[in-house]
Amino acid sequence: MPATLKKLFPAADSLANQISYYHLVLLLISLPYDRFYSHLILISFILHTLINLSRVDIKPLLTTTNIVLASVFFVTVAGTFYSINKPEAFNEWAKQITILLFPLVFCLNPLDVKKYRGSLLLTFALSSTIAILLLYMQALRAIRFYNFPLSALFSSDFTNHNFSGPLDIHATFFSMQVAIALVFLITELLKTETTHYKGLCWFCCAILATGIIQLGSKSVFAALLIIINIAIPVFLQKGAVRLKYAAATLFLSAAIITGIYQMDNLKERYITDLKTDLSKAKADELFDPRLARWQVALKLAVQSPIIGHGSGSEIGLLKERFFEARFYRSYLAGLNAHNQFISFFIKTGIIGLLAYLSTLYFGFRKAIFRKDILLFAFMVIIAAVSCSENFLDVDKGIFFYSVFFSLLIFSGNEKAEPLQHK
Image (cartoon, rainbow, N blue to C red; front, top):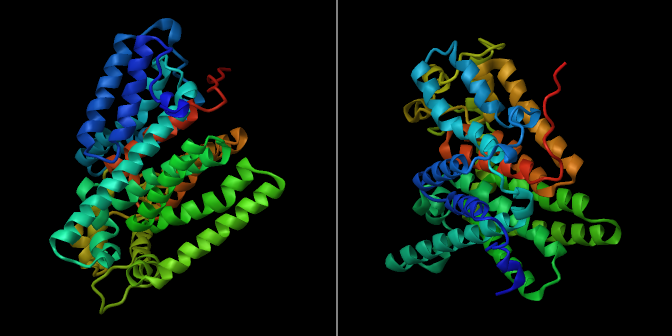
């Protein structure tokens, strides 16, 4: 077994730490699949941490970093006190509790996540590649069963949600995971000299990149263009090497965009749908453009601009406004704002929105200060998807946010500083 892959199975650590490590491995592997597995593994990880709890190994709990990492949950709790829909507000507590738990578990568990960061992320990247391959196998089986031509693989029947459907996961939320795996493998390619490992990274990058296009998430695709063409050369390279890399990735990006433009279904998904989303509502169309829904949502938000309408209030209030605006499709589907920033504005007002923006600023600042390309990539993906989805209202989005935000922060070069008491 190559030395790089041997690191995936550490033996030079205590038994308790090895068990903690494999808990995290299984948790990362489980992310694309049914949430039952992720929740079960998290519960097991927490119990294991509590059973092996040692006062000597406990890191400070009351730190600025922990407060910021859990700030989304605290905002939801605060919005419950004046919510017009308290049952739904408490339901949001239940979904977002992992945002609070992960920073605490990382503080209570003695595992050195800095030491195992590369191994954990490589495991995640390999498992993400396998998940994409499984989806392609499922798509090809369906094509063969129905005697479709192979070109049907790139039709609407096998892209976006129809591609991720066998895993029962939203295409954008899966794309977020695949994007992190892809960025990690690209960074590995840039620093490794091992031929076999480089070949593995190239293979996985090709599968993941193809999967990203197949999943059809416009926000994640845009985020990746920024990360690959701008962030990686700025963070990781200098001089002539940076220019060569930038020229190569810009050429490759242009080729991919041209290819998308040449394929009718992908062109419709990436270009036509984007134009439609950003258009004004028309009386003769059944589709409610996203921009038009944002306008309705913003009108609702400004009715209580400081503290909002309370946690759990968004969908109920938006249904009324969608009906009044004759957005019957959005009304019947019970759609949310499909914008995380507007969602905070509706539920917790400008206070909640500023808290979320401060959290994003914290993440970006840490990434730039540490020159941590993976943390920076994570923040770009989060910021981009926040423009198009309420990902913090859905289990898969919440788990992605809470797992990777805490993992990347705690495995960085800078330790969290305790709050200064005056």
